[in-house]
Amino acid sequence: MSVVVVGSINQDIVARVARIPAPGETLLAESLVRSGGGKGANQAVGARRAGGADVAFVGAVGTDAAGETLRSALVTDGIDVSGLLRVDGVTGTALISVDAHGENAIVVAAGANAARDTLTDTQRAAVASATVVLTQLEIPVALVRDAAAARADGAWHVLNAAPSAPFASARAELLAATDVLVVNEHEAREAAGADDLDEAVGALAAAVGVLVVTLGARGCLVVCGTDRAEVPAYAVTPVDTTGAGDTFCGVLAAALAASGRRPDTVDLDLLVDAARAGAAASALAVTRPGAQDAVPTSDEVVAFQKENQP
Image (cartoon, rainbow, N blue to C red; front, side, top):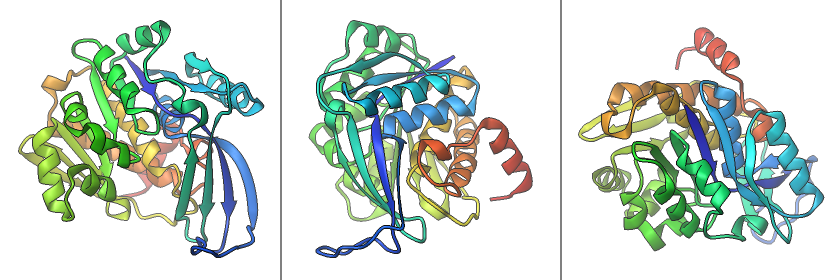
């Protein structure tokens, strides 16, 4: 069973500040750290550390030193990077401010992530071999469509529609090619074009087989056909929420791959179990600084679930 993540890979430059600065305001940072990031790479690390599935990453870095550092980090985690290209230009970069409560504000410069809008033959072969194909929207929408089309019959396509702005340009096509849509509250509203969350959930659930809406400290909502369930969050004191959603998505994808089930045989119980594992992993992740550095191992998640109740 395997997960292939098609997505972004960035160098994260993280400044810890007392509060997120207002427009026109300059603040002095308490610290500055560079680390691995990008929604795609973060989710690949989440899936790999969850265990139960082989993980490959498909994406692109630049020819700079940051690209090589990020590639090496994925290899160290046991992730197949044969589909990670090196292209002319700079590696993607995220500028992140994290406040005293662990909340963040992020600006992303795509860099190499925007270099291609189609898969290479090597990347296409990786996607075609996957049990689960996991994508996000920090890469060109055309590349997401290509990855969805390249997956094998019976393979899952899990789309994390984040950031949500690109989703509108290809909403109907993306939903038709998606088995599981994962969004947060803001992304749900924007993806559905609705101000009311319940209205947005109804519209998206009617258009896709499975919908997962993450609700931060309130847990998440899982909708499968006409069935739905709320999965509570674990109560923790957050240090940095940057990688919470990506950890959740990676663990969810790994659980689907390990289940041996096809999208047309999915049921609510399987999805709730996967979401519970994702919720536990993301709860642990937010108690640590960083994105990839914060992702827990499967042993850590199991121990955390034994000691804590959501």
